[in-house]
Image 1 (tube, rainbow, N blue to C red):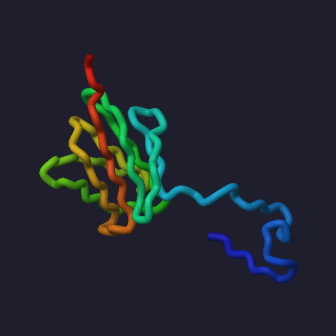
Image 2: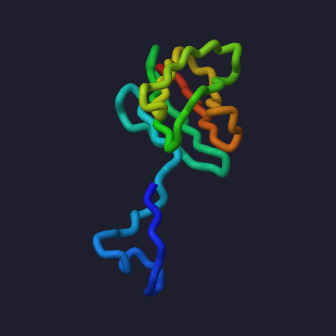
Length: 122
């Protein structure tokens, strides 16, 4: 982590040569569905996604923090997730249209709700 102290000016990034402000806040979560970007909608305690799934899909959640463990609810769904070696990628198999809630590191302030739905035939 880099810390910069303001020693003059009005404290803007322009006062530090070579630095620029990011265009916006860094998202806490990003996601893909079967390798394609999955749109996440933010809310106060995390994010959620509503998406159409195939018979077996995989969601990968990328976090902005290190993950030690994940509680996938409902526990009765018995979802076997994997955490990547960098502790920021979580792979979740989606086998049916059961809504899932992912709680990271036992912190209810950082959750992702997944709402898979099956495509209608007709």
